[in-house]
Image (cartoon, rainbow, N blue to C red; front, side, top):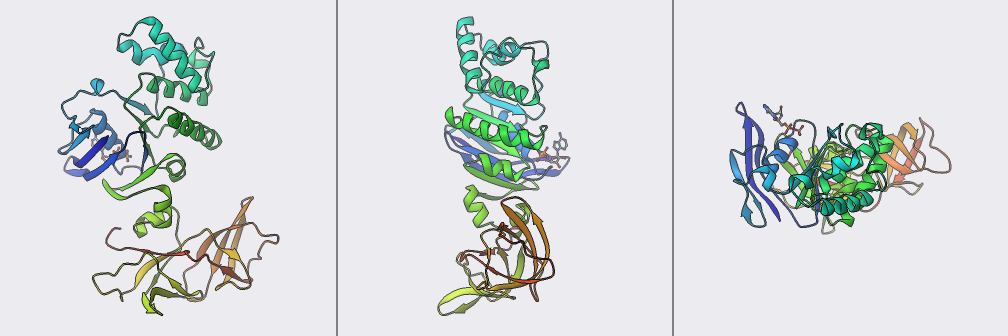
Length: 352
Ligand code: ADP
C-alpha cells in the first residue's frame, strides 16, 4: 500500500535519513522505533508531503505521490502536541477535517457521532475541550484524525505527553480502536514498550538508517545487532567463539557450558572468530539443576517477577527477569539458573 524506496534527506549536509526503504501493507500497524534525533519525524513529514526528500520515492497503491499536495493525500496525522482548537467544542474539533471536505451537515453529524462512539466519547459532543482530562483530549485528537477516514494514519509520539499509567491504558485502547476500524497506521515512538504493544511490525532506526524490520517477536527473539539488543534493554552480551560439537554449532559460555546457536550462519571469516552472543534476560528459572552458576549481586522485586543481577565466574555481570520464586535469592549467595533451550542467540556484526 505505502512504499518508501531509498529515501534520503539531509539538513546542512548532515544526513537525517539515508536510503530508507520499507513498506506498509493495508490494515497494518507499523511502528517506527528509535531514539530522539534518529529521523522519525523527518520520515513522517516526507510521507505526509510536508517535506520533500532529496532522493528516493514514496508510492501509495503503486503510484508515486511526490507531486500530490499534503491535503490531497488523505493521510491523517496526530502529533504529541495535538493542539485541539480551544474555541471549538468536541464536535467542532472532530468535524474540522470533514468541514474542509465541504460535506453536508447531516453527513458530518453522522460521521462525528460514529467516531465519537468508537473512541468512547459518546455524549461529549458539546463539551468545551478545555474542561476535558488529558486522556479525553487525546481521544478527541484521535477522533479528529480518524473522522475523515484517512487512507493512512500517522501518529507521532501520540502519548508522549501523558503520564505512564494513563499511557498504558490509552495505548491498549488505541490499539483496539485502530484494529476495529481496520486502520492502516504508522506509529512513531522512542518507547519500545509502546512499539511492541501496538505494532504488527516494527522498524528500528538509528541515525537516519533502518537497523531492523520485523514482527515484535522476530525482533525480540533475534535482534539483528548488538545495537538493537542494547536498545531493547537486553544487555547480557558476551563474546564467545562458535565451534562445532556433535554436528551442531554452538558456544561454550563461561559458567554456563555449551549452548547451540540456532540462528548462526557462517561468517565470511569461516566462523571461528569470536562473536557477540546474547543471553535473553527472560525465560530462565532458579533450579539446582541449572547450568548457569553465579553469585547474586542484586535483586529487585517487581510483583510477579524479580530482576536478578548475577555474577558468574569469568563473565560480565548478567541481568535476568525471573518469575518471582517463593523465596527471594539472597545477595551474596551462589545460585544456579536453568536457561531455556533458545536462551542464547548470535548477534551479527557489521550492523551496529
Ligand atoms: P526524531 O523524530 O527521530 O527525533 P528528527 O526527524 O526530528 O528525529 O531529526 C533527525 C535529524 O535531523 C536530527 O539530527 C535533527 O536535528 C535534524 N533536523 C530535523 N529537522 C531539521 C531542520 N528543520 N533543520 C535542521 N536539522 C533538522
